[in-house]
Image (cartoon, rainbow, N blue to C red):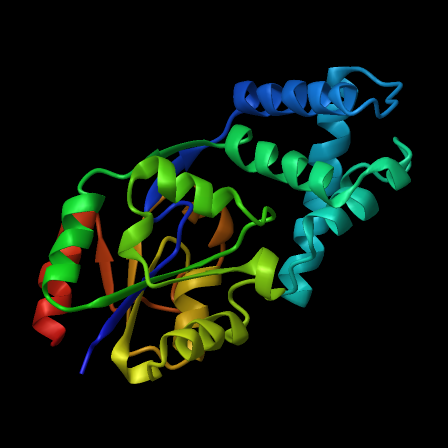
Length: 248
């Protein structure tokens, strides 16, 4: 019997978007942070933008293969700002602020319509709710959930930056299940990508998968159509309670 519904965060519970304007804003804020902490940087904001984007892509390409998430201090010291600042000055707290700023500025984030009534409906029906999210910041997801006013709906929040595994690594899903004390055949997973969400949940043995389209879907799932198939594809979060009710 279905007892548990778990969600992806960025692209699923919240819609997100990035363009040249948001990326420039990210670089400006990161530039200001380096100045705030008196970390010498000889380049311009444009140089910093190019540096972060290039090295973030290198890190992302590597993590797609390894399915391992490094800590913020490792990402910013060993990848993003390597060779352009004195990385010995980058403390854990500074790196988390840099990571948090990247996550909340590179993307414009907005809670999807109908998420709150959908979560309330599931809770009222006795479902247990959780989140499994890939993120390069330790605290950003928690903070964003508080801003949206939905933190208390979720029994467990499993983040790649904390557990060290990135979806679709099966351990990300297994850890969430262990923390909630549920079995795979009790679980439904809702995400926006085949590459990370649907494939990972299927590998972990989840009973059903639900996909919703986001800004990230097409780029993440290029060439994967047909390799993994969600049980349901929805256009609006309000569709989820009826699907889960039918499954129960």
